[in-house]
Length: 234
Image 1 (cartoon, one colour):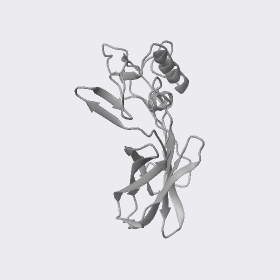
Image 2 (cartoon, rainbow, N blue to C red):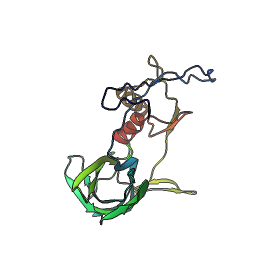
Image 3 (cartoon, helix red, strand yellow):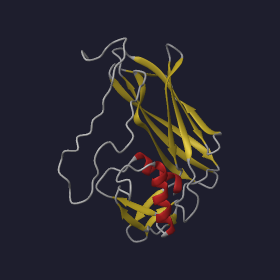
């Protein structure tokens, strides 16, 4: 835009307007979560663009599907290849796959579906029923013409199946699980709503001491740090 100093320094200012009246609960004010500037190649993976589901689990393997959205923000068609790898908690590759060559039209996006089989999977469980084991899906976008990686993205996933039955209740990995939870607001004593990752984990640990394995968030979208802590701690 006309406001940019091309080839020179630019200052980006982020401002929070906290002038709105308070609600009946303490909603906090100011910038109380991380603010990130995301810089990408014009051909890149969409923000939160990799979505992984567990299709089937047996004693010897788990079948997974990754759906990845690639965006082309150039004015020409781009040919790409997407490579995806699944790493275990020790960062060893346990599965990988590569797409065919794909052409994405200018200023458009394309969703790529990739299937995996993970042998002898470690399942994600809630803490009081097992171990919340996490894998990492690494996604790479290769530009066919330049033969270079234009983007890469990591997504943590747990291998598990979820089912609800009107008569029998909630099932995780084929086993009935009793949901024992609390309603938890995003604010915490002494820090308001500016919670660090360590405080998120502290709060969840306290809930687990009470016997909880579920949390209902209240009135605000849950922070990424809170969701990561829940995934990590079960």
